[in-house]
Amino acid sequence: MREGAFRTISGSCACGSMTARGAFNRTGILLALVTLAAIFSWSFPCASVAALGSKLAIFAVAGLVLAVVTMVRMDWAPYTAPAYAVAEGLVLGSLSRLFNFAYPGIVVQAVALTFAVFGVMLALYRFRIVQVTDKFRVVVSAATVGIAVVYLVSMLLSFFGGTGLGFVHQPSIFGILFSLFVVTIASLNLMLSFDFIEQVSRYGAPKYMEWYAAFGLVMTLVWLYIEVLNFLAKLRQSN
Image (cartoon, rainbow, N blue to C red; front, side):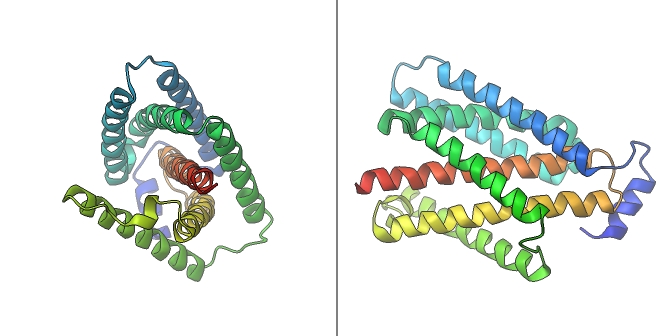
């Protein structure tokens, strides 16, 4: 996304220009929606673990559809981003409840670690301890795509009757190291989100991009939380 494209869009839009403060304010709104939806989903009665899993699948599909729509139509972000936040909150509430059934107390640890990582990454970015360069963006983006390919291959193998890629889910040494690597890449993606907010606000992007930038940051936080849950679960299984 280059500066010229944003200036062209902003010039033809009477909605005003994006600011970094506005993007972080929108992020706070979306996180509040995620939290409220997660609390509702957690407390909603389910007859069995299987029923909870079915509910989780429905919410996950809804969140995926809303995420794709938001990425394709950025100007719809003021409407689709809050809907996505609610859907992901329902996913996280159901998923957290499933993990808590198996590993009591793991959710509190995962939430604390996720926000601790968020704070550390924000501080590293804010004080320029870590610089987000073009090389940094390429490496982190390539690693993220690689992780997505690994997960996709594992899902396809499972779908066609296989066991998937064992290290993705098993609590072996390699599996734990893989999860630690994924958590690290998810954490570094937070810096890409911070950099995106700073760059596009400097470019004079239209106001609706505050919602789009907030959506990207929240999506990264959701991914980080899920990966932290998975990492902690593997550690518990290995003990």
